[in-house]
Image 1: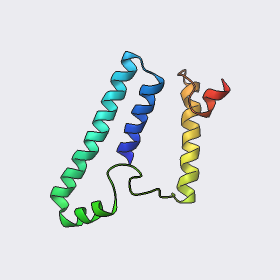
Image 2: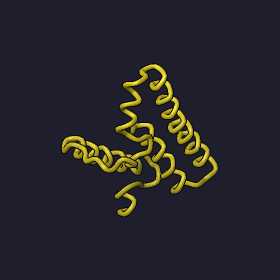
Image 3: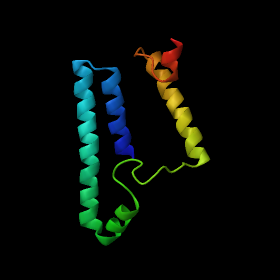
Length: 105
């Protein structure tokens, strides 16, 4: 999930900042994250064997392909707070305002 988070971050940044330097960094992060995740799964398949194949049978490499799962309340609240702090800091540090703060300014 974390590597897909990096990949989705890269896609969103490529959309909102399609400058040459923005696209280069977004592409690099996306490729490293998604290919890295696939290579990690390949390594686990080779090292762990049958137990890993059983896990893969219950999950999906692609986000939400097996349906949506609601996180626990603590994770949801912590994730929302982290999102708000990160998007606030984006503008406070001199970058383009992001998230809900982009609507304010």
